[in-house]
Image (cartoon, rainbow, N blue to C red; front, side):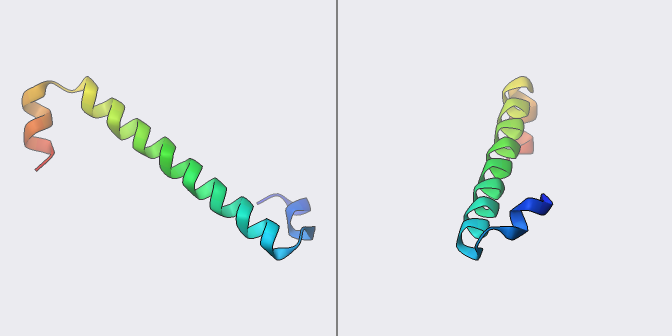
Length: 49
């Protein structure tokens, strides 16, 4: 977290960190989805179970 963010009130800070987490999670999900789409169907079927 950036130093100036510590000066913000707690509620605002929590909101920011929560937003960051969901953003990060979404990015990871997109990477996984792209990887699955790129993989051949047979590999995808065995890897998903």
